[in-house]
Image 1: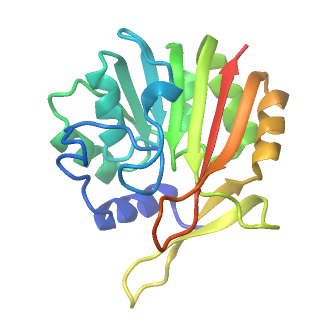
Image 2 (image 1 turned 180 degrees about the vertical axis):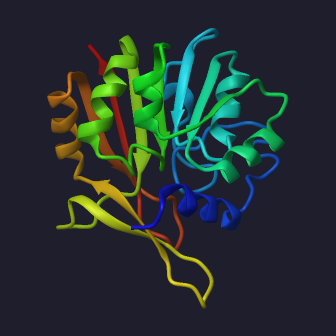
Amino acid sequence: MTDTAFAWDTYARQKPERRLVNAAGETTWFNWTQYPDHGPGTELLGIKPGAAVLDLGCGKGGNLAHVAALCARAVGVDVSLAQLEAAEARWSDAGLVLHRTDAVRFLEQTGEHFDAIYSVYGAIWFTDPEQLLPVIRKRLKPGGVLAFSQRPAVDGCYGCQASYLNRSEDEDPLVVKRWDYEPERWEEILREHGFESPAASVLPAPPGPRKIGTLMVRARAV
């Protein structure tokens, strides 16, 4: 497997920058899916002014900047220096609190508790849930929300899988681990780790040639 930080640094340099405004003309917005202007927003997190919110795998900070715009404490974690530098450059006035580390290490070491923790195609997809979910649970306030989105599992390919990050035509793809489960299994896993009211389903893709939906998962800390 490829070194994780190197893989995501490479991905960051290839990924296009977020648009300056979305279809509604907003300069900050929250997008759970791989499609622009599609799907729900921060209502899944139940954010109120003054809430403490953690983004696991915050990338270039687009979603986190919208959290900050809602007057919440917006904390982001990412292993990629390139991702965080891009976040700091674009959202320097947003008040983001950014940490370069992996999700498990951050959650083990921080003394802060959060009203909501989320991951959009981020650390929850690329970290063993047996390691990550227990420390998420410890850092969520009672009744706090955990929500995440990722690509649905390929039929018959569940658990730890190889995920390939393409590079140039002359370079082999980079390989990282990801964890894929069907929605019903995600609900079971969350219950096993002390979460209540888990709900997982696949949000269909918007009309168009691409048909792959988005797995959406939400639960609460007991």
